[in-house]
Length: 121
Image 1 (cartoon, rainbow, N blue to C red):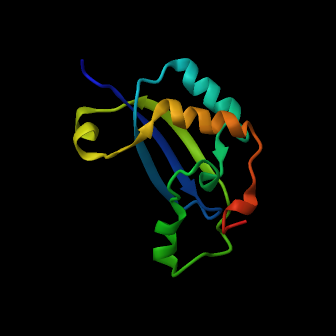
Image 2: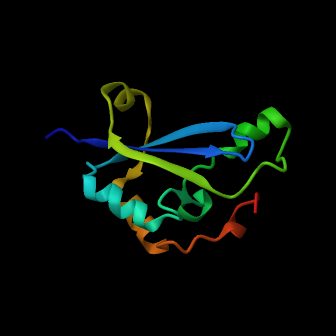
Image 3: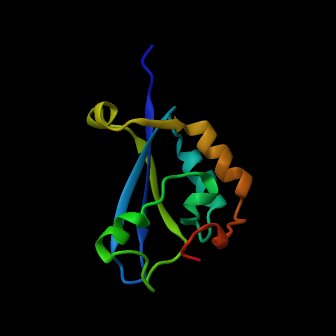
């Protein structure tokens, strides 16, 4: 039986609109309802604190270009989509965890995001 994977795409966009994209490969197949459930857990259906759900932060990539945090940094990452993993991603992106575990993490938060958990608060 073939294992299927889902990609969780997200990004960090500072207030100057510099962006860093990220993705996690998850074991399991996402349904359209999974994305709706996930969005209902987010601030304004798209924002989350990566540290609060143990997702790798992306803002450090911008810090490497600016020699550290700037006044444009903030606490939120943006959710983009859940989608099937491609064959290329299956061979190049390490499995981060399971879709069900990620979904449970977001559902446990349910819009109770705490900016203070980010160094950019």
